[in-house]
Length: 135
Image (cartoon, rainbow, N blue to C red; front, side):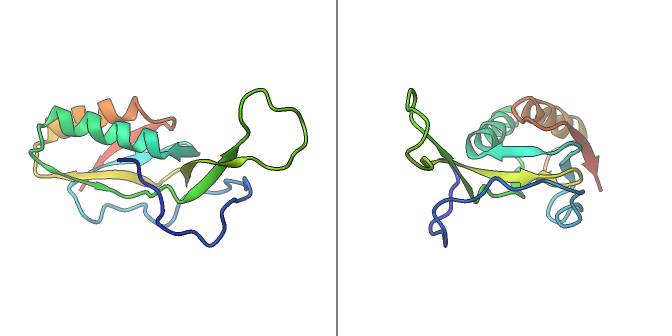
């Protein structure tokens, strides 16, 4: 199931900027291994879920995964072949802004080589460049 907020204060949001590096969420907290973003981008709920499935399938639900990001920003889109004007489109999907240094996933309960391979598979599903880190 795709992640999205239950309630929102505002239905639509501005696009915004993505300056600087991540100071919050840049250290391992829950697991022994992690995957850290080295570039900046928006992660959609679909990309996060796709990466999670790739990791889970590899080690057959053996270890434990923590998802350290949550897509809480609505992105609006106009339907196909709609002319200019007519206002902003309806909310289409949700994203999270990821800046360099942000930990996206953490993992524990499996060995080093399996964790590295799982994060390699997950990183192919994500639009940001990542690096493997461990405690």
